[in-house]
Image (cartoon, rainbow, N blue to C red; front, side, top):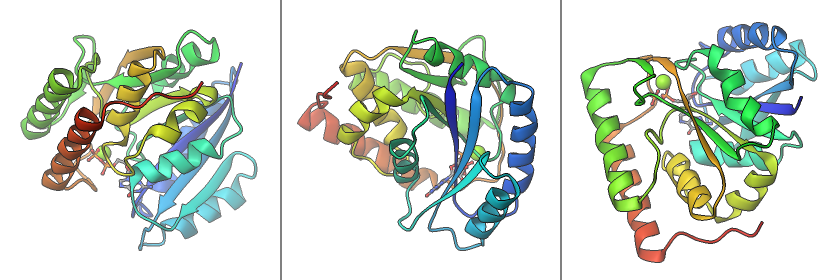
Length: 240
Ligand SMILES: Nc1nc2c(ncn2[C@@H]2O[C@H](COP(=O)(O)OP(=O)(O)O)[C@@H](O)[C@H]2O)c(=O)[nH]1
Ligand SMILES: [Mg+2]
């Protein structure tokens, strides 16, 4: 049994949040083994995402919280949500529910039992069931190949929007994770591995949602720059 903050980072997602939060609450109701809270972490949306988030917070007091960060960047949103959390475990998942919710217990249970520190979904394991276009598949495989080769990261997928961390690990690791955008996930895994934290992969069923906030070229450039920064400066040590 653990207290869990499940963060849903959102950028211009007013059209889908209510449905996603409703489906997630129904799933969580069926899993009382943990004490859950959903945190909608919006930054810089211009489509009324924050208003919808606040309405959901008012409709589900204590179960849904709305968090607003004025500056854009998914990493920044996660970092703020996780560092201000007083739950024992912090997680996040994409609002489009591309990862099947059935995997949430596999993500959280090892952390609640103190058998791992960081757990994350993988779409590239032989046991994963991934449905997506060949372009996305190719980019994803190429990126993780580079990350393993140049970064020495021993994971099969770094970018799946489905991760969790023990809050004690988050407090130690996040102060040395610099990226505020899409490289945040990779950097967190690199820093965690380098500092001897226990990583746990969860092969997932993933059905890609083509409605995307990702600009592939910009994201790929940001990822390579981030990797270059860590190679040049070294991966920092965390204070436990
Ligand atoms: N808070 C926040 N969330 C973001 C930002 N950019 C993307 N997201 C969220 O990150 C999640 C994944 O985005 P998505 O566009 O589905 O990525 P894709 O599945 O890789 O195409 C969604 O929940 C987005 O709303 C951002 O700048 N801030
Ligand atoms: Mg998506």
